[in-house]
Image 1 (cartoon, helix red, strand yellow):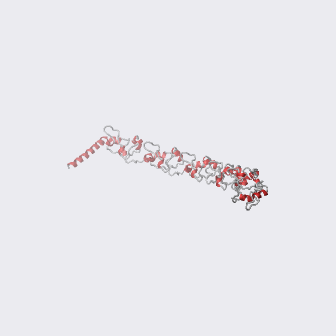
Image 2: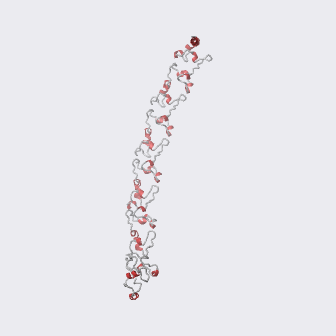
Image 3: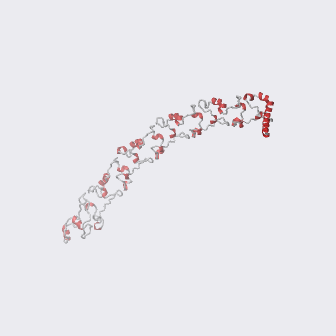
Amino acid sequence: MFKRRAINVTQAANTMVSLRHVSCHLADYNNTDEPDHQAAGFSNQCQTCHTTNNWDANYNHNNTGFPLTGRHVQATCIQCHASGQYDGLPTTCASCHLSDYNGTNDPDHEAANFPTTCQTCHSTSNWNSTFNHNNTSFPLTGQHIQATCNQCHASGQYDGLPTTCVSCHLADYNGTTDPDHEAANFPTTCQTCHTTSNWDANFNHNNSSFPLTGQHVQATCNQCHASGQYDGLPTTCVSCHLADYNDTDDPDHQAAGFSTQCQTCHTTSNWDANFNHNNTGFPLTGQHITATCNQCHSGGIYNGLTTVCVDCHLADYNSSADPDHEADQYPTACQDCHTPSNWNSTFNHAPLFPITTGAHRNEWNTCRECHPNAGNFGVFSCTHCHEHRQSEANSEHQDVNGYQWLSSACYSCHPDGREGPNPAPRQEFPR
């Protein structure tokens, strides 16, 4: 009972204090118009905002549901409470700053349908916009970072503005003439060739169906796309190099019926021909390797040119005098006696009959001395040199069975040129 009474006494004392303040200062309360306490419905508990040391109000806004920050700290009460309402005043930004919202024209918030949640772009510390574009579906990069709002939102549209490059850069696309994007039917996906960091094209040809190699890497777009066509341009060499093909006269590609598959002989690294003859039916060996194309293809024929030696070397055959191939009617199979490595004759007589060793060495000067029938080397004569008189040969061979006065009989017994009898010859003379 005593405790409960003590509590009641305390409450009564507080009420008394409160009543004491207003009982003395009611006139101050009623007469104050900055702000008007009575009209604003201020509490008559003066000690909420005043002390006995200083009659100036020391109300702590941070103890309310709307703590003051930034510029709000320096604001006077009347700046926010000009309506005279203090209790239950809305705390949304727009409730105080709607006139700022409506009066802003750079950009026009109302026309652009900006949200009235001012804190999205502004803070109490700085009224300048702090809107962070990177928190949207279109983060700013490269040159976009330096752009002003109005450069991209000149139409006044902010909410739902398209984020495709061409929606902002269509005029750039249509106005570009080097190359003419519209005429060339370029895609309007600007990011294929451009970046926000540098408007210069950085198109990577290696991501296309025609990667650039060799001299093509240094070529300008216009060198290959002079026609203005970019999309679907043919990738065959001759589609760009037909003029080169037609104008080449060393050798004359057109007259020679060369293939228009330039890559057969040329590369992008070096326009000089690198045709590999070893991949044909006539691989080059010996002196043929160092020959120029024109030496063998002087007639302008490349495709289907004969590979027979004499077709190229008939003049050599006809002009040979030591021995005279034409007069002696040598066979025209040059490869029987010659090789591409050395034009000197490589014909070896030794397996047939040794004429460079033994008794026959230095006893003859020309093939005709032993082979009287021009063009037929299968015919030879032994008797015109040996035993000029048949009677002498007969007397020397009286004890030889089957002896005949015939060169073929001589060869049968003397295939190696020795005087004594020998077995049959090892091989036939060529005919």
